[in-house]
Length: 148
Ligand SMILES: CC(C)(COP(=O)(O)OP(=O)(O)OC[C@H]1O[C@@H](n2cnc3c(N)ncnc32)[C@H](O)[C@@H]1OP(=O)(O)O)[C@@H](O)C(=O)NCCC(=O)NCCS
Image 1 (spheres, helix red, strand yellow):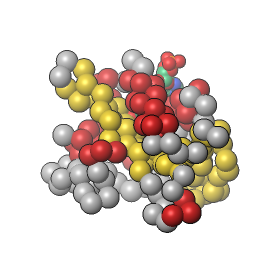
Image 2 (spheres, helix red, strand yellow):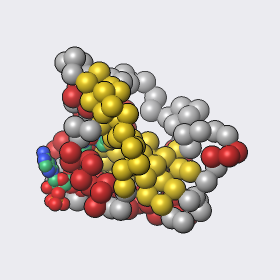
Image 3 (cartoon, protein in one colour):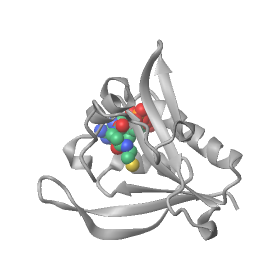
């Protein structure tokens, strides 16, 4: 179900990698159910957020990453992503981390505006880091929310 949602949620202009084959299992050794929160409307999953460690070393244990956020196109513009972001922040607080980081494409203005509204600040950006399927280059923006 989440793999299907992913496949329908990410247009090529937001691809860092193409979404996985929707028929393959969503959860893997690295993508764990306990790291995912879903949003439901009338019993249907319409969005999800996932957090995870991004460097599995002891010196980075105080950092959690906001690895994925997607809302089904038919459910957008109703504040669902905002609720999912709040849930991810709450989970980061519950885990006692110092920092919740994320990465977003510089062209993803809807996502960047949402993150900014929830207190994330830009830490820096990797210029022209991602080449999109149409051949254009976009920046990889690193943002973080600090709990210190
Ligand atoms: C980004 C995404 C998660 C937002 O989901 P959502 O549930 O529609 O988000 P919300 O309704 O909480 O908020 C969206 C805000 O952006 C605004 N918005 C929506 N579409 C917009 C557009 N095309 N241009 C500008 N603003 C837009 C909405 O009006 C809303 O602002 P408001 O609260 O002031 O009304 C969703 O568009 C998505 O899944 N996109 C593809 C995957 C993605 O980009 N994920 C993030 C990767 S870093």
